[in-house]
Image (cartoon, rainbow, N blue to C red):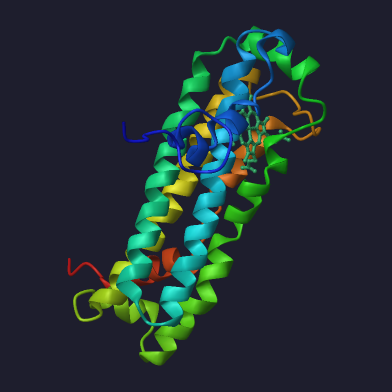
Length: 233
Ligand code: HEM
């Protein structure tokens, strides 16, 4: 009989479990008997999986930076497109929490979360800097090609590769703003729009974040372009 058992090191009966590290992953959730209520499991898993994806975006952004520095702009655009898809997934995923009753959330909020807040998410903090991280590398690439953002916007097909990357940045920016908006609506739905958060911040302050683009220079160039097209009537 050929040996068909696992060949990887680690815990678990199969190589699948050992590679994915399923036993370790499942140990990261509070055991059922310690949950504040049955709804807490969904809350914890939603945040845990979000942290994994947020860190993955950070990893892909580093790769995109390296591609821009090597003038492999199409590869950078592909990675930013991937990151945008992950943000869209996170936006879809957060909506699941709208199925939780506000009263159930208050039970775990007051007994399990300590002073914790999503604001302290290390993955989210990394994402707030995505624009600042990419921008200097992008402007260096523009300088190497002696072209400005406005010139790219004026002639997108002439500067096709740069335009594609610029569009990928815009798609990413838009997806990030949409995540922030969807999260704000979720927060309002569960705790209302008038209360103070566990950090003593008014929940309504989330609104400001839905209007902070990561690439303000790109949005400014679009407005500038619009200004160049005067109606003839
Ligand atoms: C019951 C669901 C949720 C409620 C009621 C809620 C509520 C809030 C509130 C009130 C804030 C304002 C800041 C503060 O707390 O001090 C906040 C911020 C934040 N939360 Fe949540 N949240 C929920 C779910 C989530 C989930 C699933 C994530 C996923 C990672 C998340 C991530 C964040 C982040 C990143 C911030 C900072 C946002 C920003 O500055 O724009 N939250 N949340």
